[in-house]
Each structure stands twice: as structure tokens, then as C-alpha cells.
Length: 431
Image (cartoon, rainbow, N blue to C red; front, side, top):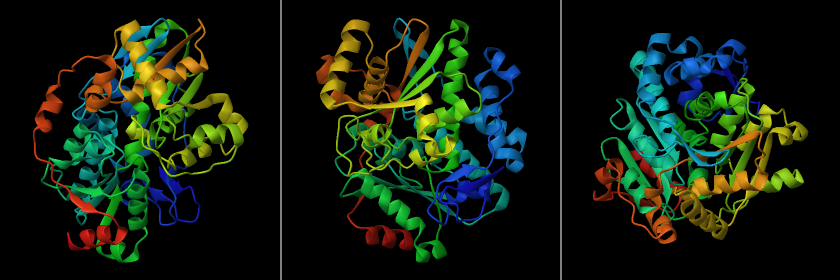
């Protein structure tokens, strides 16, 4: 399988090179040259397969023969060693819980898959040490830190916006040590992401460092997120209803993966990209004009993104045809107040505790409307305990800490504070 840059100036590359490079030399995101739909027989019998076999069928065409079947299946087995349950909220609406992994966020799947792919390539090729450079608005950092912890030949440098991630999220990315370093940036997530992108285009850094990214711009982080949608379909197929997914969206990697699953033949009637007040894509869907803005801080901080990287991939899936895009995708934005009210309603009426991101997904379903012939699924992308200062005052209840959180909450934070790109560059050159 070859991948091409969406800026269409750089040469095509293999899956391995796309994973190691992260971003193309022309600043473009990599996208598969060909997408072959899965067989109807497989989709018709999906409930007969374990999750690991489903994931293998979904991902194998993109990896091709660059990782042998035996090793790829081992990578998938190690990636998917936790559950993805659907929890009924009300009639015809359920939450797909993606937070049962080690850092209690949906990004555990992509981070673990990518770490193991990179570990395989390093082991087989004995390549020079790779530095994984990643920006996080909350959950990516912890998932990447956990996924790559102790991986031989890989150093991880995580940039996060100071004061704009939750206490639990910060502990998950600043307390592991070993090959993980956290850089605390005086700025927003967009500032962190801009620094990372600039580093990939810095000739001096490229000459001295083997850099890659573990944000959803990396194909090995992004593509495994297709798995969730197939797992949900497997659980709901017997209902014989039109499926509608509402995905809390920040950098748009998850919703883009869902649309890729649809491209592979997954029978989904509609997708909803639900955002907070960082409403760049909802505005685009109304006006047809993409206008990035500085991100605004909200209680759903992992979605505080003012220039979502993966939206360009969504446009590519639909060949930049807005009419086709709008048949499959809607996008709505919601305020913090609306999100808080939704969390309160879900708890009081349905006895379920949603995190601020899942609540935005729930609101998206409600705004779109679920008729009796349809079934709505909103993605619960992180455990509510990761947002204690937001969740507990709303539900008026103290949450018990799961063991994954207890393991890090009392550890000492270790970070290096930076404000400018040159400080990042100096750190990388000297590390």
C-alpha cells in the first residue's frame, strides 16, 4: 500500500515510511492511494468474528505486506486487550465506551498500535533512534506516553498547553519518566501543534534527528480508530436499524476514521461531528468556507482545536464534493452551558455519568434527531474521572478513582516549561 501527500507535491511512500515520517515533506498529511471496500460476506457475518479478527480485516490492506500477517496479528492482540462496550442510555441511544484502556481514553488504541508498529520497524531495520514529537490537547499525551513507554529505540517528547489540560491528564503525561519527556508550553494547543509542524519542516532538525509524530496526523495513529465503529456495528447488527454515530470532535481524527470505515462498506446512515464552541467545521458545513481561528478554552478541553488537522482528509474522502459530504456528515457546536445541562440530564434521567466530551456527542444526536427506525451511538471518549473538577460539581457526586488513575495521581509532575519554538528546537538538538 502506498500513501500520498494531500498537498500532492511530495512523492508517494510506503506504510512504513508514512509511519516514520509522520508528515510529508510538503507539509501534507498522508492518505492511502487506494481504499478497497471489505467483502459483503465479511460484513454480513461480522458478529461471528472476535474483535481481533475484525481489526485485522479492517487494517490489513493499509499495512499490506510491510508487517507480516503473524506479527500484525500480534500487534493487534496487544493493542486490543480491553473492552469496547455499548451502554444503553435511552431508547434507541447508547454510549460506546472507549475508555477501558490503560489511560482511560479512546486514543489508547491508536497509540498502542502505532507504538508497536514503530517498534517492529525499528527492530527489523535497526534504524536510528526515532524521536516521537506530539502535541496534545489532553488525552493524546497520556495515551502516547503509555503506549510508547519503554519502547526500545524511541524517545517521546510531548507538548501540552500549560493550565489547559485536566489534573489527571497532566499527571498521565508528566509522571512516567524513562523515554518520555513532557514540555509544558505557555500557550494553547494550536501553539503546540504549530511548533510540532514547524519542527518537521526544520532542515537542521531533520538533518540531526529522526522525527515522527504520534498525533492523529500519523496514519498508524489515525487508521486504527476505524476499529471502534466496526465493533459497535457488530453489537448492533441484529437490531436492523439505521445507525447514526455522533463523534465528539476536536482534531477530527476519530470522525475521519469513522468516515473511512463507511468508505470500507460499514453500513452507517449518518455521522455527526459534535464540537464545542471551537466551531470551525460547523461553520464550514454552513458556509463552505474553512476559516481557522484561535482555539477557545472549554470544559471539553480535548476538543479545543482551532484548525483541525484531519478535516482535509475528510474532504479527500469525498473528493472535495460538499454535496456528497453533507449527505453523510452533519456538524453542530455546543456551549459549555449546554454541555453541563446535558451531563446533568443524562445523570438525572438515565443514571449515567458522561464526561464533557461524551455529553457533546449526546447533544449532537439530540439535535440531529433519532427516529424510531434509527439507533444513535455517541462516543464516550474518556472516563469522567479524568475531568473531576468539571463532572463532580454537576452531578453532585464524588467519583471513585479507577486503578489506572490511582497509579499516577499521587506521582510528582515533571515537565520542562517552554514558550517559543526555538526552545523546542534547542531541546531536541541537545537531547
